[in-house]
Length: 171
Image 1 (tube, helix red, strand yellow):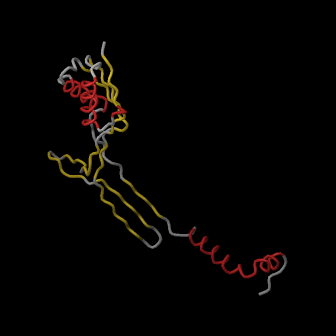
Image 2 (cartoon, helix red, strand yellow):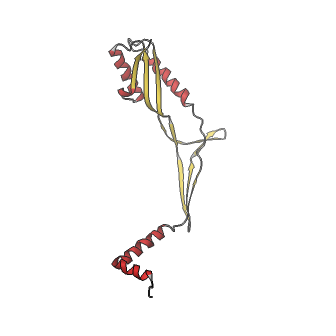
Image 3 (cartoon, helix red, strand yellow):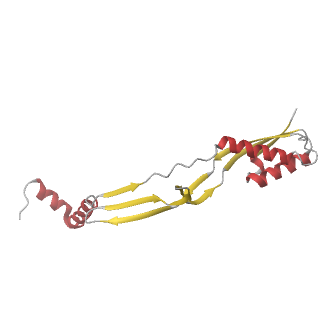
């Protein structure tokens, strides 16, 4: 077969690179032609969790009550800020089905009977909230020993470093 016109000139310019280029182009064409892939993902069931605002205020009250018992602290108020709230990861069952031209990936949340005909989602893991910072208002904040004790106590509870905890004297 004889190439004519511009194609002959183009093929001659490619020289020894025409066959590797042809193989690369054929490979790209094959990558664009695979069978269809369908992904079906069922929604995770809605789980009623306590509001984060209520949860964090309860934590703040418990922490303030605990910190007020430190000698020399006096009255204490605490404010915590969250980077991320509590996160629940549910157990899923993944099924992969391959047909002649289609591949189907199906994920379903695993449910179990909770009694009285109700079903609940099986929880795989609950990740604790991640705190961003803390402010402590306290009557005894002018005493360095009290300040250090407050910072160490909040750090051990929240996992925050001392640079993310501020202790201020209450008026």
